[in-house]
Amino acid sequence: MQADVAIVGAGPSGIFTALRLIRERPQLHIVMVEKGLPIEKRSCPKARAGRCVQCSPCRITTGFSGAGAFSDGKLSLSHEVGGDLPELIGCDLAQKTINEVDGIYLAFGADEHVEGVDAPESVRKIRLRAIQAGLKLVDCPIRHLGTEKAQEIYGRIERDLIDRGVEIVFNTDCRDLIIEDGACRGVVAEGPEGALRIDAERVIVATGRRGADWLEHLCSEHGIDHVPGAVDMGVRVEVRNEVMERVNDVLYESKLIGYPNPFRNKVRTFCQNPGGFVSQENYDGGLAVVNGHSYKERKSENTNLAVLVTHNFREPFNQPIAYAQNVGRLCNMLGDGHILVQRFGDIIDGKRTWQKELSRSNIKPTLVDAVAGDITSALPYRTMTSIVNFMLAVDQAIPGFASAETLLYAPELKFYSNRVRMDERFATNVRGLHCLGDSSGWTRGLMMASVMGYLMGGYLAEEL
Image (cartoon, helix red, strand yellow):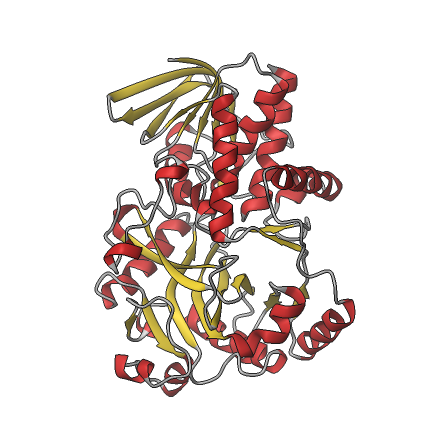
């Protein structure tokens, strides 16, 4: 197959590359290779079966729009949130492009309401309590799509791309890049009909967090300049809505950052879901990780959010993703393949949690097949100590956050630690190859990944 541009991965960064490029250069032949299914065929069987059935690939993380289709669907409207892309392109361009991309989401049906901008005095009081607890509050305007609405919006985008002539090859796994004489000439993939070679003038790798490990191996194999970055490991915390009520009402999503003793690692909250649901995602090799969703209409009695500890490794170690995966597998082993859940009070008391104890609590787990146990037997001491001390600090700012009944689910892992070296137009040291989104190590989340793709589409429109 011959194409002008081949895009590996149909997540936000790949989508917005194609979206802009096909509008500005409609004569180009763009081929997108996606491991999963079209969005209209993506549904998690767990709702019917009552348990995870280990779809391969996971329908929550893989398919058109990637994990974005089943995420809580929050668009962060500030360049201060969403990774380190502003370091590469500049804060002004990042913010300008956020505004443009936000307009595209609105055009495809996103809710016009923006969370976190209506009560500055209440935000000031929350910030004061955070400062008193030794934490930094990052308040960011949020456009909440909602899990079910995100699927509708990305469904419209999928149809728009297809109607404009973008060829999307689903259920097809990219196996390798074709690199000859220092230039990327295309990709080799495997689909339902066998091997597929796509020759292209430009290749975009946009495989998201799920593809970060795959991209790291390709970088090593083909000499694509990259450096090991940080890796985030932690837990998904679940509390009653009453505990987070003030923050939920004012900010919807609060991002708190701290550097607790004794290790002073960066610890942060991430992906807060008021009235949300804790969920399970499956990665290659059967690795089960925890995440959280928040719907527009369907609500629970709980709020969940991630508490993540950033680990920076130095020479000679260069496998942070593999390290995090092994920690995750230890958690899965203790939970017999399921997500582990433990009460915060039991962690403080040095005991495991039993299933009967969960049934007596005020907090009812929204991930009903999580297994009660002891996450401290799997998470490293440094990670666990940082989480506990950070949660105790958050409890000073948000009373009840670190109550005895607060639930901690593990493992919560973010695979974007490989950072590809690129210039400000996202060109790698291999001619014709560009790496975008969370797998590149430069973005974290829907908006910044979309921004990176939108800019890439503009650069390609100029150059091709």
